[in-house]
Length: 508
Image (cartoon, rainbow, N blue to C red):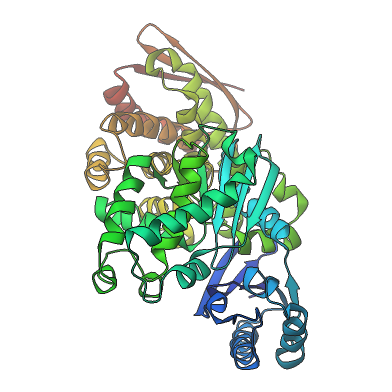
């Protein structure tokens, strides 16, 4: 573990109680190394007197004591614990917090609805590159709705209904008839009517957080046989959600248990959560759904433990790329920066030929920085490991398609291999991406060759296309003998892919 710090974040939610363990290394790079969850359904345990009674509080204590043991085993040095709607709305909330501290030794922050919205927004906004939107976080006992513009939170509200307490209010067994479904919508519309701003910002994406939308996205991915196993930044359109809104309530509870992608502990609460979500979407006239895998726990961690410089990085993509390099340091950073700089310089020189947009330039730059990340797994065949790690690591600021393009460029070997990748992920990639990955992959190979010794023997380059030739002029600091050999090795592939000849000259 060395100098690494480990932080425990406990989220006492209305549906479940969760512990996430984060590790921060001496480069300030962080990752989640463990997650633990206990279903508690606190919202359904609060009686008609609005009190959470002693036996239920003791159940929370038992979970917190076990989480404390997990933290000790994992050498966690600091814990931040927070409670949300179920305890916030209980008549004896302060007594609960005091008893939990006394009996488990864990100090709990009781979050207001506004706190929950602000902290959830911090978690989402540091991992999704979206300028404007409506943020909806459906918990077990509350739903937070916020509007953000230019990545700044403008307004938010916390409604006192979520998936668990709505299920309890309108059904006894998890099944819902047409009248019950209408009544849920009526309840949500009544709350929205008190907050007119929700309906005054049409055509924004609805960014969804929480278990309801994560479950719906997993169902969607199973139905579509989606090949990239990540829900964060997954997108759904209104028509697909409408199909789910009609399909899931038509099933019996037993049949719903067999739906691929729907966890067993969410079978009886998915429908009210889905109706809350769909009603807000329609009232706000949103354009489409975007799923955020990051939320309250991430915000609790980032708000307290991340350096401010990381929270205000030039871009989300730059921050997450730097974080991955900090976790998997596998090459000198000066080498990676030089390779990335040379790659985009070649891209710009060839712009008149390829005519790709700035997003592909960003993909090439990111691939150049991350192309050696697989070395942290094994040097031999590291390109294969780099592909997997880029495709499955938290690389924020790129779409799913762009992540696969980036992984393909970073691991490029031959056009045939790229075509195999396309066949594997053809539901995410476009057919034209085979050419994009191949062409940009060859540019990355040239850029790598230009610093093959990793010593910056070549200080700088300039490049220009003249007729059917790409001319590269390199200014050297000392004899780049390794670079000469490697550049010579990649010329043939470049000529074959780009149909351009290649000349390379050096000046000292």
